[in-house]
Length: 222
Image 1 (cartoon, rainbow, N blue to C red):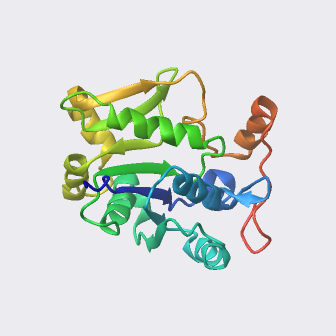
Image 2 (cartoon, rainbow, N blue to C red):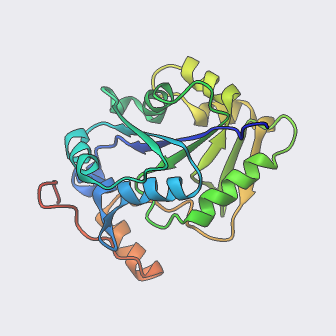
């Protein structure tokens, strides 16, 4: 009997949150649950076997939350610290990819500050990857012309990202290989909405009825 392909994800949580007053955005609370833990839970529910959480500027605060959390037993979780998170997303992505098993066939990248993401969105992107056309090495969601996350790719793009330098990563590869990219047009903004500023938090509540709470008192807040 053939074993199903392994599935893994990189959860990007290395940012400084400068425009949020240096707040660790992934610790913002939705219904009392930190976004960091919410994303891990959704990935586990979607059948992701391995998750690498990439930490950076707020590594200590995020590690403390992970250490005391009741994490899904179905997922193997590893937290890694990017010592140079300001180099760009490619740098953090390489840290996460390096922490995942080599035999993974399907890789997702999720942002830790996506408060509207739902299980069905991850499942839809996984389904799009499995049904992709010949020669496609990257599947990404898009709404109103704006690309979003989660993106899905396999070993070919993984190797390309690992061979890149500095902050270069998926974005640069995508621009250089448009014929190998499959866009999934979405009728909603869940995959393209993240939060960068206090104004974004206000807009999120007013537009979608999702009001994020402040992180624990031990975490900085503007």
